[in-house]
Image (cartoon, rainbow, N blue to C red; front, top):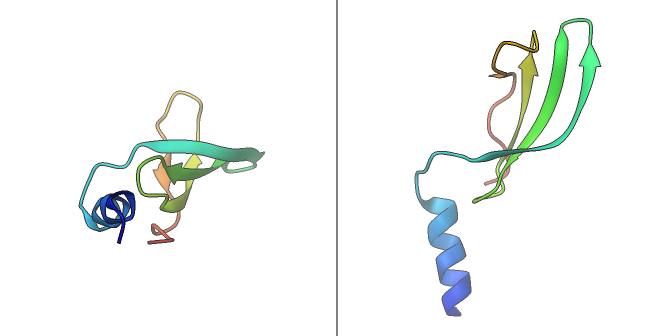
Length: 65
């Protein structure tokens, strides 16, 4: 393995606080559905933000490790 591949593997296996980036979103009758991806490990999930003044909450489990 190269140094960068080893580092990526460690990053994916390590427990960390995800830094969620919005990939896309759309409005529904329940609120804004937000598709997010972790900037560090690439894991994805779907969130729902029921009101603009409330934080989003996870609708799905984390996928893609």
